[in-house]
Amino acid sequence: MTSPSVTVPFVDLSLQHRPIETAINQAIQTVIQRGDFVLGEAVKSFETAFSQACGVNYGVGVASGTDAITLGLKACGIGHGDEVLVPANTFIATVIGVIHSGATPILVDCDPQTALIDLNRAAKAITPKTKAIVPVHLYGQMVSPRELLDFAQAYDILIFEDAAQAHLAERDGYRAGSVGKAAAFSFYPSKNLGAFGNGGMVVTSDEEIAQTVRTLRNYGAPSKYYHTEAGTNSRLDTIQAAILGVKLPHLQQWNQQRNQAAKTYDHLLESLGEKGIIPLENQSDLGHVYHLYVIQILETFPLTREAVQDYLKERGIQSGIHYPIPCHLQPAYKSLGYNLGDFPNAEKLCQTILSFPMYPGLNQQQIEEVVEQLALIK
Ligand SMILES: *Cc1c(COP(=O)(O)O)cnc(C)c1O
Image 1 (tube, protein in one colour):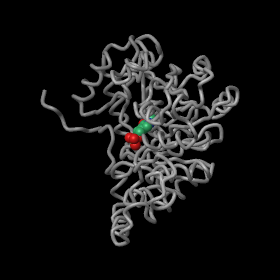
Image 2 (image 1 turned 90 degrees about the horizontal axis):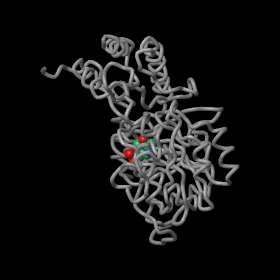
Image 3 (image 1 turned 180 degrees about the vertical axis):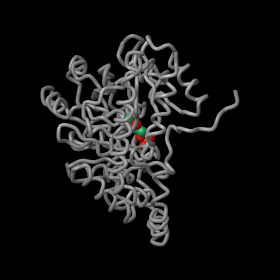
């Protein structure tokens, strides 16, 4: 079969960029004219705007979401000899960020319905060395802030949120990034708020932590050629910050479009529940910002997941798997000492999940097309 044209792409960023193209070009030109390419004006103004949007006092722009985790944890005083709880089923950057801080990631299984870290299991992984938990607001849904705060208080550990997939997500009256001591965001192009390249930010309401990240990202120097921290070079580029500043005012509306699209999927997919296609559970209604729309394909379904992906692809519909291998089974992290069977819920989800097309501007007909094609599978 010749490959058909794509009718429902997995993601289409051009839809969000076209209407603001002129404003973005202008913002880039302004940076070029000013010439402040590193830690320029636009970085400062975007740090202020984004931290305010998160409901916290400070934002510090860094080179990536991965670096935001590393530098944020370091600034919180987490490092060598400390244990940090992280979900086993996250994008690997969560684990990388923790390891680069010097701490040891302790993996935890997830809830099978939401795919979010299971705090009951996290409680069983607590040791005297446990200093922090990095909850991942996976796929755009926050881990319950109320439960997180109770958990952190009970075990006297700090919360550092990985909010890379959850810009402006809400739950229990909290916004992503405002629950813990500090939080990390990524502005990788396909995130809910994406740059035209890499970028990240640490947000916090703690002035000292913010100041330490500012120092760490800039060679460890609070002032020129005076180095108080063993720092690095990890700044959010001024041009990226300028682009993000133009995009930020549209973010809430884009998130609403994602949430609407998810509601349409949920509704139409109800008819396929008996056949074995089950969306992950949304426990936060409009607060879920659907970075990804993820379903499970149960064994009762007539085709395997891989066959469903091929079937959809042949009909012009793209899909993805986020993520096919849990962190504890990645060859690079064998030395953490985990084995197959250690995190059964995470392992099972990696086998059964499939992500359907999801982006602002995905329209009703496209969603209907996805579900109609699935309904035809016998
Ligand atoms: C994207 C992502 C990161 C890393 O962000 P980068 O900007 O790509 O370094 C970290 N954690 C999660 C959950 C992510 O999805």
